Image (cartoon, rainbow, N blue to C red):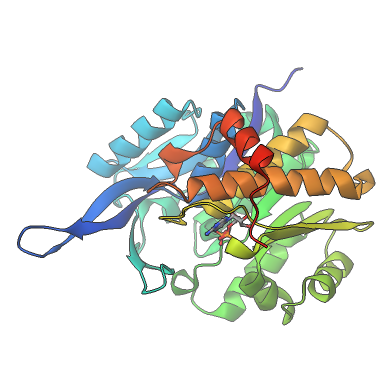
Length: 326
Ligand code: ADP
């Protein structure tokens, strides 16, 4: 059977409320954006012409309806979207620091995304995919934690590769120890992992990419580890080889979703080659990083993320400039 979807993801679909200047009375204004890392990854894949579906839960409210419409507009299959009559759609207020660094205030005690339960997972979607993708927000509490592990099991049963972006959001976890425990449980099933340096430190106690990756390769059946470093670029490691690539020099205004665009672009490259991850050559890895760094850079040139994912042509134009940050 030919798979219907390139990627099926499970995870949060929520509203990002992003600072958007001030009113005439000098009150801060917030812009309503579609957010949630797994949803952004699929939006990137859609912009690259890939087929996908999202398994998620939103509130049966105004925001949930808007999010559903976003999926439809982006061409992401929404048949795995579940409506909660009980809890509202999760909201995340984004705060920008002096240097443009982001922090979040989540309205999720709990929010609808966390109430996704095992019985609501449509496993037939997973059976029709080439790859399964998750984050870790769905592991912060029950019942979405159990639902996530059930979906992982379904993906493993049909032999799908599983990718994961750790995307650690500290305030959503009862403790960093619990976060680590759940992430480690998840990593037992993951083949493609994306982390930031802080997340590498959380998982291994090390920030050094080489030593940290070695620990992860020794403990888990991972095949590819990607480490992103914002404007410092990214690197990738398999058990055999590694590659690194600088970031592209663009006029960044909002870094939201850079990591999600990066992740989506890597999955696109992986799906295009169909090559076994264990036999990837360094030059291929380097090309993947260049492509994904360009995708990440381009999304930072505009406000928002989900609706601003770059087309393949834009990424290729960016690659041709070779205008990297040295
Ligand atoms: P995350 O959003 O997951 O923390 P990063 O911020 O590291 O991920 O971004 C992922 C990739 O996007 C980076 O490796 C880099 O290539 C690109 N990127 C992010 N921020 C910038 C920036 N300010 N300028 C250029 N490229 C960027």
